[in-house]
Image 1 (cartoon, one colour):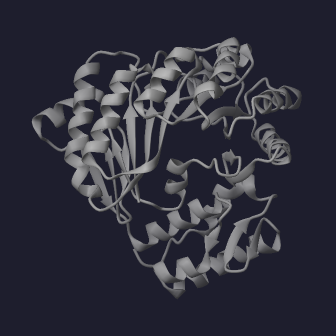
Image 2 (cartoon, one colour):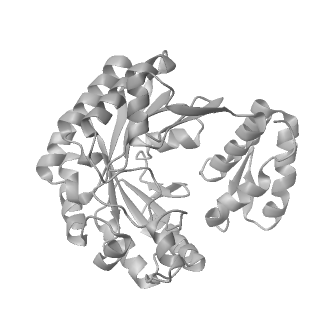
Length: 378
């Protein structure tokens, strides 16, 4: 199987924490959408013989597009690629872009899943993050979405400066009140070259508190699991049968094709990434010139990625999978490096797989880095 990711690089305004590629200018919008159509046609041979099980509109803010524009892209994908009849078609959307009529129009395009950028139900937090929507709009879209979409997800952010255990508890309980099929929750991080980083450096905002974030994470596990959600990846919780097809494929090392400026692609051996500049991407596509960079992953690189993604998921890292893909030296190395974490009960072994324990879940990326291979085969 393969997936198709479409990066729509436009936003109404810049969230203070965001480091994704986007533009608040809609200049060249039509031409850029034309270039995305061109790239879809150019890349189709890469997926020959592979059914497409996921189409994902990310960004940026794809909900800024008109439903007709979204429909045009979906129809082209279906014409050029072998799209599975039950493919998951997800659109990331902000609450201020949606109402009942807009959601009904989106459903007519073939979009069958929405990923709603709620982030918070508190106006003071939304304003601090420079989100374009209000708490009222978040409630309005969640009150309406289930009329049209059975499958949808809401995004939340925790570890926000000025928040408290009580406000985070209120956020979780408010989210559960709508019983969304899927919840994604991310710790607020300070990325270079963001407005948040500049605000902290200038003393205009307190820094992120890692202890606050870890406390929020652990409470979230308790609350969401008690409500019947499966914690299937570090940042993702789904009701049974509602795991995200697109992101699950990423974590399981499945191939995907990234379309649009800054989009990444992976085929099992190579990674490529498109230029993160709208005008340069557009001009290169129109001129038939290179618009991406590419790297061949070494055995070591692929092992490290398998460890990183595996430890983030409920499926863990398969020792047999490591042995088969990379050889017994890598399996031996993994077991040797994992031993201290097994002894501290931050990892545990279940048959042929190694998993992060409940105590280790928040630390999974740091643990994985200590299991990385740094000296064997390139």
